[in-house]
Length: 97
Image 1 (cartoon, helix red, strand yellow):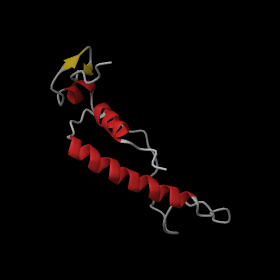
Image 2 (cartoon, rainbow, N blue to C red; image 1 turned 90 degrees about the horizontal axis):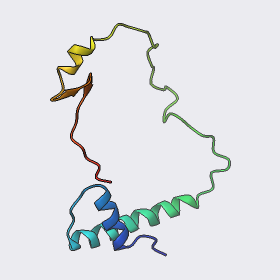
Image 3 (cartoon, rainbow, N blue to C red; image 1 turned 180 degrees about the horizontal axis):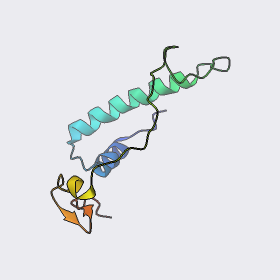
């Protein structure tokens, strides 16, 4: 059963503020349906006796120790933004609801 239809794709595109054609809607519906089908197949694999892993190799990436260090003054950082209000970066409104 395909849980994804064209209306779902149109809604997600709208949430992402994307304009897609009817042709693209059909194409994305098919492609995303294939991905969901593949994930459903992966869900059938028995992993009960498989140890969880956090790293792909036994030699995991070494991380540096966290150290408190002085940072740049706020005024210097705010110079990098296009607009500043009340000591914060001001950005254009993107949400309409």
